[in-house]
Amino acid sequence: QSEKVAAAWGDCATVVPWNLYQEFGDKRILEEQFDSMKKYVEFIRKQGPNEYTWEGQHQLGDWVALDAPYGSFVGATDVDYVAIAYFAKSTEILYKTAEVIGRDKEYKIYRELYHNILKAIQEKYVEEDGELTVKTQTALVLAANFGLVSEELASNYMKKLVEWLKETNYDLITGFVGTPYICHALTKYGQVETAYKLLFKKEYPSWMYQVTKGATTVWEHLDGIRPDGTLWNPRMNSFNHYAYGSIAEWIYRDITGLKICEEVPGYKKFQICPRLGKELDSAEFAYESMYGKIVSGWKRTEDKIEYHITVPVNTTAELRLVGSELLECQVPYQKIKDEYVLETGSGDYWFIMRE
Image (cartoon, rainbow, N blue to C red; front, top):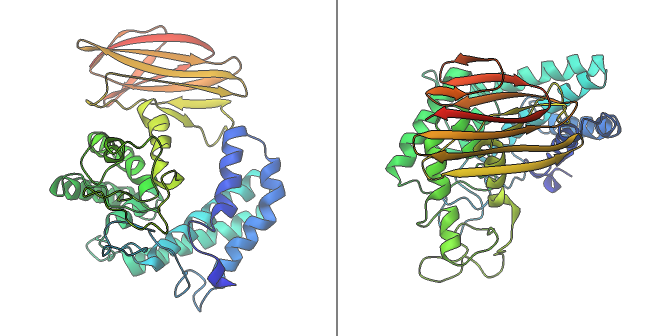
């Protein structure tokens, strides 16, 4: 029944197996779930007269975003836009899964479907001047983070988002769909400073506002407790909820910089690309991978940055470190724009850079 499935929530059918494969490198989860993943994408494909869109069905959209009228559960972002964005994402995952497990026929079918969905998105939602027809922050974030438009347009969208956030005092108004990706998308397109400002803002609405109200877990609603002390809605107002807590992934992936290598999953090979902000003087993250402990840490000392990296036995890492000058380094490197790129085998490494 179509009314029982909503984009983003229903896409766990494809996203969860793919993420498990990326984390652990075990193809069996993809082999076991492939038929289910395929059925989900085909289910969406059969909704409505156009097989390349997902329109007119029951959707939750950008759930509880603050860009909608107060008291609304559904944010301002067009729910059909959210749906087709996730249709594209799940189809992309499906064709990549088919490639990994050797399903060549399905790989070709779903790669073609994916590109047709992208074409449908661009025809319906991208204007001649490149602007999106959906005028919300979440729309910009999904387009950039899901690769729905060209790199040039995605970069322009993030510049527009930066200006938008500046004008609104960095208010966090995205909902369950936009929030998990907003800092990822900003960072991907060079807007790290803005991502940090979003994370560390203390005034309502923001993550740190919740801390000022005594929160020890992340709320279901950004306005779960409003500045005047009233509740958003006592009927549906969890104070321990994943959706906005998804910022934790950005902290691990970007502040400390540990990133999966999609072509070599399970951390057999990985990247460490820390992104520093003025709001922090140090950060460290340790992850117990199947191969052993991965560590990524950094701290500021005067005008220098000290990095500490641990790469487990039988793994390799690509390090991308940002700074004006690499002062101390144990391995060969090359400089690409403002990054120092290093390839390392197993071991403990220390690097000192001038900020």
